Each structure stands twice: as structure tokens, then as C-alpha cells.
Amino acid sequence: MNSSQLITKTSFLLLSCCLFNGCATFKDISTVKNVKAWERNILAQDNMKLEGDAIDAYVDDHIYFSKEASSGGKSVGGGGCGCN
Amino acid sequence: MRFSIFICTAVLLFSTNASFAGDTAANFVLGKNSKGKNVTLQSYKGRVVYLDFWASWCPPCLKSFPWMNEMQNRYGKKGLKVIAVNMDQDRQAAKDFLSKQPADFHILYDPKGKIAEQYNVQAMPSAYFIDKQGNISREKKGFKLKDTDELEHYIQSLLGQ
Image 1 (cartoon, one colour):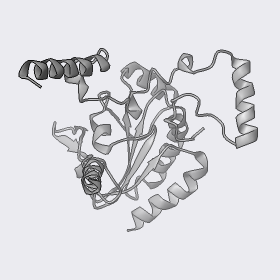
Image 2: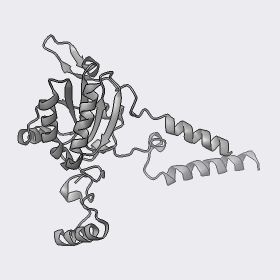
Image 3: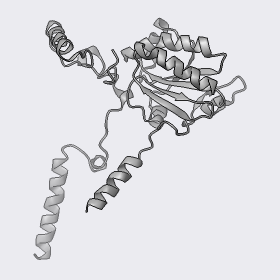
Image 4: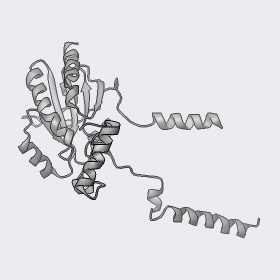
């Protein structure tokens, strides 16, 4: 492999890396930011729940409760710690 | 190869600055006293501290408040200090919460999560029992009313040490 080929390949690899990172800037590549437990205030709002219909959600809840004895935990307000 | 993977995993596991039971509780400023001097967590060494992290949007936090009031009123004179750190980014939301659910204990505001970061808070609410020596004796994630008897016994045992 001559030097020009090497440069081409290296730049192609670098470019691919950037593209696979989507809109991430170079600064963000190494820092994946997770949402911390205390940063869920907006996610914890009622209108952020993954449910379209209150009756449908009620039926789902009933199934989970009767089959798995679990309830709640559909929103992130409680941090998923099972405290209802 | 396997050894290097093991080393990397070990480094990753132990490089976090998490607070674990047995560690010295990270110090932070609670506020200023009447003389304008900073009051820190360390100034409560010799007392048992129940350090709670809460937010207005967290339903179990609301359930924990009457119990924390009860604990502060019952064991305050025996050496318990309840400190509740609010994590709301919107201060007004916290104030609205407190107007509906008054607190008889020390409330602190940490909207940027600096204190929570020090304690590596994993769930809301989270509570840390800090013993008289200033060490984290136990971490409790979440709050359930059915656990309160056991938690009270734990506080009693820390106070008795």
C-alpha cells in the first residue's frame, strides 16, 4: 500500500466514524451522557407516559397486576424503584 | 487478552466516585449560620444524619415527607438530623410542593445535582443514613410505607451506638 492509499483509507475511516456518530460533535464522541435520576423532571410528567388512552392503560395495569403482581413503574417519576 | 479485559473491567468498576456504605459521607455546605459562617455536613458529626434526595415530581417522595417529619420530631432531641436535598430544576415547583406538604426538617436546594453527583444518587428518592462518625452506614433507594418500621429501628440502632 503506498502512502496516498494509506492516507485515503485513513481519512475514509475517520469520516465513517464521524458519520456513524450522527450529529455528535468531536467533543461529544467520548462522552455519552445518561439521564441521571434527578434529571427526570420532564420525563416524569404525565404527558410523557407511553400510553395513548387511559382506559387502555387501566386494562394493561390490571393484566400486569393480576398476572405478575406488579403495579406502577410505567412512568419514570419514582425512578423505577418499585415504590408506588 | 482475558487478563487485559479483566483489568479494564476492574478499572471501570472501581474508578467511579460512588458513595458506598462504609465510606465517609461527602461533605457539602448546608447554609450559613447567624454569624455568616458556612454550616457543613461535617458540623453534624456526633449526630445521626438522615440525608434524603427528593423532587416535587416524584410521588414516593411525597409519601416520605410525613414520615420524615415524624422522625425529626420524635428523634431530633435524641440526636437525629433529617436533611432533605431538593433536586428540582424549577425552584417554584419545590416551593409549591412544600406549601402543600410542610417540612419540619432542613431543606437544601441542589438544582444542578452537585451533591447528588457526589453521592451517586441512583433513584428518587434516595436516602443515606450517616452515623455519628460521619460514615455512610446504609443507602436506601425508594420509599415504601411498609418499610418505615424497619427504617425507624435502624435509626434507633444508629442513635444508640
